[in-house]
Length: 230
Image (cartoon, rainbow, N blue to C red; front, side, top):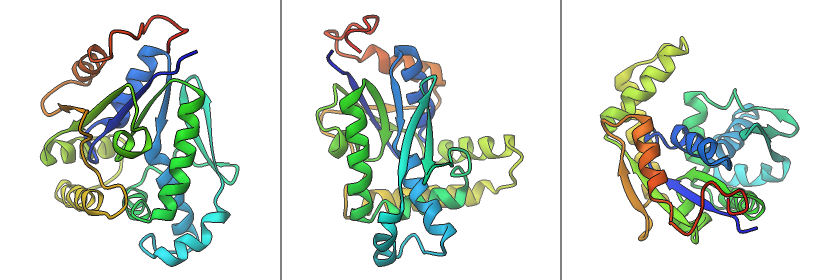
């Protein structure tokens, strides 16, 4: 069986996870949320009183962190030392912590090994910051997803308020801008568009429009209706 891989990169709030999940469901392949892995490392650090920017101490506790990825109905569940943390890693504090630990090379090495192993065993849609440039440089399709800062902040604000979480739109915008700077300026695998990636701007587009656009870009030699192909 030949496995098929789609790499989706882009800044925070561009819609990567939502769109990747829909594509995976449409194509009946596995969705890999790489950001959840970094969030899990950040959660462990925060729980143990370690600053996510403290390179030396983060590196010291890495061997205490065991991350497992399990799938149920093509939905990723992530476990930290056998505890399902899939839901509790979705706070703003963890978001910033994930961006911080992702700048540490030792963390990235550990996470990338997990991600590559997943892609070796199944057809995947994988989203993150450096999937097409570093994690899966030979992906069959590479997408660089983007949107204006204003639109990304608005989406995040709506998402949080719908969950009953009090937040400030201006504060969210500041946090997104800070994450963009962190992600693009970090020394290890910074966020950038792969040379052979297709840029898709989601500003003003519906989720379904973006999903349809990306699926239309899948190389024709792959029969997306053939289970032996993907």
